[in-house]
Image (cartoon, rainbow, N blue to C red; front, side):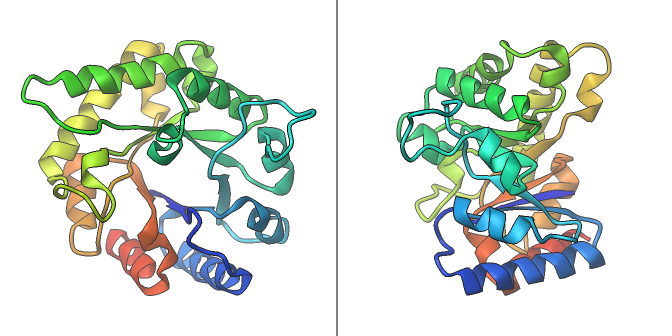
Length: 247
């Protein structure tokens, strides 16, 4: 299982960052889970460049620019130089502040150009009885992958994050069978965009709210390849319980 821990802006103290990193290193050596940490940008270099463990690092986002006179921007190349090997692209919180499908596609291409493995986030705001949300998911995936070569498309990890099922204001938690259906649907869309057996290499993660009680059932029933975890990933005991319940 691939576990991507998106710390967002929850960790503002470097001492806490180091402690979470230490916990992750211990978990990565004692379980079969592949752990990817996504700290705030300044912490990536501080933690990743001295990393001798199996833990990997991800950018929480990358700039849509490629450098130059762009004050405040952090490019994919900078993240790669700092030690990141993954990049979260198109997270719902980035889309909410203006990342269109076109911007997401540009960021995806920049990440790939600098050898960062993209974790492409897709997800609907709500579900309707007519299934229009399926077309919405298809468009998010297709618009992001269409400009890429077949080889590049095969490197993209897709994280399904239904906005209605995440965060404090979630309408309800997703049911394992609902997640299984969406995982299967996403694989079907990817099969249309990838040649031959390339889809067997593509990973599909769940990016919604999980807890130690439901994570095993979600994994078993849905056949998802892992999880993109937010707030729970910055609670040491909770994160450890999530990982251990998957092992």
